[in-house]
Length: 166
Length: 286
Image (cartoon, rainbow over all chains, first blue to last red; front, top):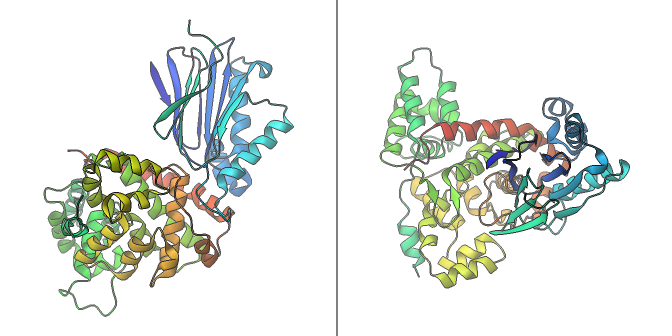
């Protein structure tokens, strides 16, 4: 099994059934995983911040840094490989928060809010999600089955398994 | 159970990274090299930076004001002595491959320290702070106590290990297990090395910035940068995001969330650069 690491502020797609996309240490950042079960193609973005208007140069240079520039790019990358929007299984992980009673450190929440807005505007349904809390998460998306596994605080949990292993 | 005295007594000179030494030695032979070139190498090495500041502030040099920046230290000491110091600091000592007790690799530890240094400096510049280099140094060295404490943390009993998982923060877990924490041990390291006051304050108070006795702005910046680094996943240890942020630090600095986001966006490439530098060096190899 080949693991393809997706760095912070990056996105990758894979159609290799012998591969898994993995992203490490999602804190306030969010991972969005897309999977096309008919074509067995998966995509993953690890974005860091909500809005690209923060810094136009960074948005041009690294669109996957921001939700509003990166998430549409992830969908387009999947469409370019022939994936259909209505077939995509969408999962979401991350958006954690530091323990901060006054909510000044709310990047995780802002990251999540903008994603829900984007999905709502574009009619995207989320199949499963594991967001919020004061935890760090690592996510695997297995291309052969679309299975999404979250590892957090030493425990591994299946978030979603669209296909049986063949 | 170890006594706090035993732990504090074990505080000795910190390990350092030989690649910085090699690079510094090359620079010393290069007639074209500027003091700024030395500064660039030293900025990447927490232990060399700490040793440099320690000597610059020692009785050897009768400086009127404490030397707080690497630039000042290099100019004061001269390139030859900088190389000597680096040699002394690195003699037989390097960051352990894994930090025992913290489930953290040398790379993870290094990346976290680099992220706090860079994010702190970026936040300082967004505030128009006049001394961003002190923030960089403080950020690089803020967790220096972990290098000492980890060895003890690894040796505590299984029962205490279980207690650790129920603790509300990792700092509290350290106190439960050992009667001290990495901030207190870090201060002991800093005292032994005669590090300048801003660095000592940042080490002591980076988890509780409102208790800082002086250098409030630098302490607040390190506290915020530390939280931001963990939130962004840089050098996450067993504690994860379970750390309490002091919102008074943000208020004192007058920082808004968009400034945190901007600092994160602008710092990413530099953090990756410093992390890459470390993994290409011999850092953390046994």
